[in-house]
Structures are given as C-alpha cells and as structure tokens.
Length: 401
Ligand SMILES: Nc1ncnc2c1ncn2[C@@H]1O[C@H](COP(=O)(O)OP(=O)(O)OP(=O)(O)O)[C@@H](O)[C@H]1O
Image 1 (cartoon, helix red, strand yellow):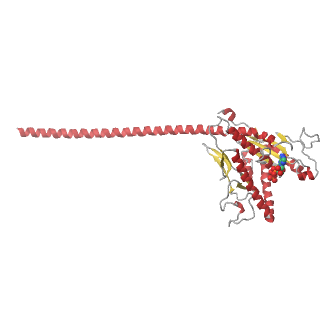
Image 2 (cartoon, helix red, strand yellow):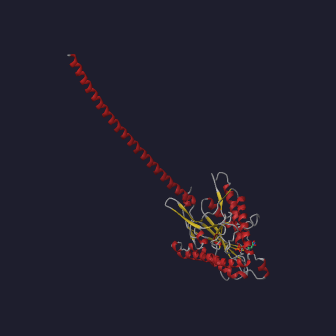
Image 3 (tube, rainbow, N blue to C red):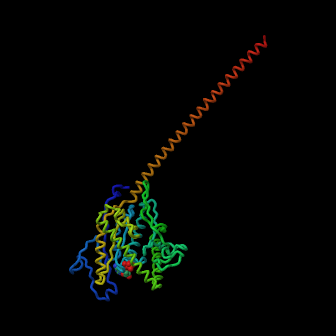
C-alpha cells in the first residue's frame, strides 16, 4: 500500500454540463437553440459560466463516460465516489446515468462503470479476492424505497398507509417497494462509522456486469409500474403530484442551501450545513463536503422554451464547483483500523500471558505452602513416633530388669 497517495488531500467537486438535442416538441415550436458553447457557436454569449467540461447535443454516451472513467480507477484503489445528475425534468438525467442498458451505443454511465469495474477485477494477478454488491434506492416525496426488494405485507405503503393500514392517497412512486428510514452510524474511537445510510436497504451480491444490468432492469420495471399505477388514479394522483412537487422542491431547495453554505463556509463550520433538512442531502452528505470524490452532471435542454430553467441549473451547479471534499481511501482507513486492531490484540495477548504467569506463580506458592505444611505434619508425626518408640524401649528395659 502506498500511504502517501492514500492520505487525504482536498479535492473540488467536479461539475460537467451536458446539453441534450432538441426534442420533437421543441423542434415543432420552431425555436432556435439558445445554449451556446464557446468555440462551437459564433453567437453573442449573454451569460458566461465556467465548468470542468461541457458536452454538446452531439456528444455520445461514450464521450460523457470518459469524464467519470477516472473515478472508476479511484474506486478500485479504495476511494468512495459519487456521480449525480442534476437538471430539469426531461433534460436527460436518466439518459445520462442509465441510458438504454441493452444497447451498446446508448448505455449510460452506470452500465459502463459497472463493466469497467468488472474488467479491472478480471485483470490477472491484480486482486487476491473481491466482492461486489449493488443496491437501488429511490427518494420520492421524501420517502425512501428499496427498488430491489418486494415489500412484505404491511411494509409496502409506509407513510402512504393510514393507521389502519389503508392506502391514503399519498402513493408510493415505486410499486410494491418497501419503505426505509435513514440512520447514522458515527462509529467510535476504534471503528469508522458507515455514516448516513438507509436502514435495511437490500444489498445484492453481483459477479458480473450482466448481474448488475439485470438488477437495473428489475428496478426500472418497478418504477415504470409504479408510475403507471399513479397515472391511472387521475384525480387523486393529481393531488399526489402537487404535494409531491412541493417536496421535491423542498429537497432541491435544501440541496441549494447546502451548496451555498458549503461555498460560504469553505467547509469550516460543518455544524451550520443543513444536511439534515432533507433525505437527499443527508444521503449526499459525504458527496458534498465529505470524503467522496464527486462529479455533478448538469443536464440542459438547448431550447429557448427552457431558457429560465437552464439558467437556474447553470447558476446552481456553478456554485457546487467551489465545494471541496477530502477524499480518503477506505483502504487507508482500513489499514489504520487494522493497525489499531493488531496493536490491541497484541496488548490483549500480553495481558493474557501476564495473567497466566501470575496464576502459575500463585499455584506454585500454594503448592509450596502445602509441601511445607505436609513436611511439618510429617516431622511432628516422626517426633511422635520417636517418643513412642523411646517410651516402649524404656518399658522393655524396665521389664527386663
Ligand atoms: N443526450 C441525449 N441524446 C438523445 N436523447 C436524449 C438525450 N438526453 C435525453 N434524451 C431523451 O430525452 C428524453 C428525456 O430524457 P430523460 O428521461 O433522461 O430525462 P430526465 O431528466 O431523466 O427526466 P425526469 O426528471 O422527468 O425523469 C428521453 O426520451 C431521452 O431518451
């Protein structure tokens, strides 16, 4: 292990922007694309933003993946990494992250990253042993769902069931998925905690990229069925959607506040950062200002129809660029934990040896005391016998005269 490269160094959150092509509706509206990228268009740029990379509507899934490929390498070295997509609805978050998982050209970051991980694990002589597991969590309406497990009876609706267990209209997005809560494991002096995590989220051991793609397909189907179910219950669902939208905004507002506070505080006053105000930000705690390596992908529509949302997305994520994390390789932390555990075990062995020596000394002392007592008793008995013998001898002599 090369400790030097593993020790914590500050690293900024990287932000890249991806502009999708105009869609049918935008083309029909006959509006011109308004998102311009320096060096590509000649039109006047009214607002200039700076990012680590920018992908145009011509960029391929493969090109976008190159932005996060270094993270895969770092994960294999023991670092934790997060990639998250941020953007208005319909701008290409799912396309970028998942894409069409069965199509070589159109598959997104997750399938490509998974393939790269298994490729690396398969390299001869590189790893002695390995274990990979996957989970799939959805946050919707401040409710957490495990998309890879069927709910057991009574578990399915979570907050969407009233006290009698009757569905109350606050529907779950994912059909039949168990509802989970967040817990925080802070660890202790000896053990590094897991941080904030979803309690009981199922983890599925996977042995190949195909296993992971199977899990993604299962989760996507679960989401699709859930969405269809909600659309069918039209009027009630409308309420659900409104309420929902409020909560999603709440989550995003909190994400915005977390980003601004991190920027202002420069990561110094952690207590002030409102991570706890939404489930999304609690889960992203290590990704923003924590120990992860993080890439944010902002997705945009190029259309004039979306200009306000695009400007808001760009200002939002430009701020995230100034956030610094302190990535620590888990292998380094593990190494320190192992060293501490070894030292503790050695100390415990010494204590045991010492206790054994003391016990043996006590045993020897007790045996010596017993031997001394036995000797004294034998001496006394010998003296008694001698005097008895003397007496008998005297008597014998008396009789002889
Ligand atoms: N870069 C792209 N190239 C081609 N098509 C794209 C691109 N980005 C998005 N699309 C298409 O645009 C549509 C909307 O994209 P997508 O579903 O990924 O948006 P989203 O941001 O995940 O939306 P939502 O927030 O509503 O889930 C899809 O049909 C998708 O295939």
